[in-house]
Length: 182
Image (tube, rainbow, N blue to C red):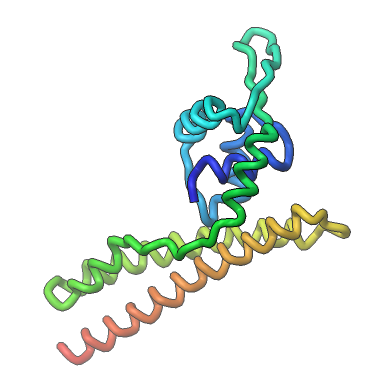
C-alpha cells in the first residue's frame, strides 16, 4: 500500500490540512500505517501534481495561509482503482526475530532484557488502543466510517496482543534454558 492511497482514504472522509492528516494518522491508522508529518507533506505535493488532490488556501491571522486539501474526482478514481487490486501480506523485517535466531550464540540476559523492553512497548500500545476501543464502544449510533475504523483498531489490538504473547513464550523458553544451564 502506498502512502498516497492512505492519504486519499483519509481525505475521502473530509478535506483536511497536512497537519490535520498527520493527526488523523496518529488517531486512526497508527496501528497499521506510520508516516511522519514531513512524509505526508511530501506525498501531498506528489499527489497534487498527479491531480488526485487539490487545495484551497484558508487565511490565518499572523500565520501563513493554511492549505486545505480535498480529494478530486481523479483521486477518487485512483482510490477506486487501487481498492480493486488484490493485497499481499507485508513481509516481516524484524530485528528482534534476528536476535532471537542468534540467541544460542549470545548471552541470554541481553535477549531477556530486550524481550522485556519490547513486551512493555507492546503492552503500552495495547493499552492505548484499548482506550480508543472504549471510546468507540461508547458511541450509541456509530457511523459506518466509525464501524470500519473500529475494525482496523481491533486488528491493531490483536497485533499488540500477539507480540505480548510471543514475548512471553520466548521469555519462558529462556527461563527454562537458564534453569537447565544452572
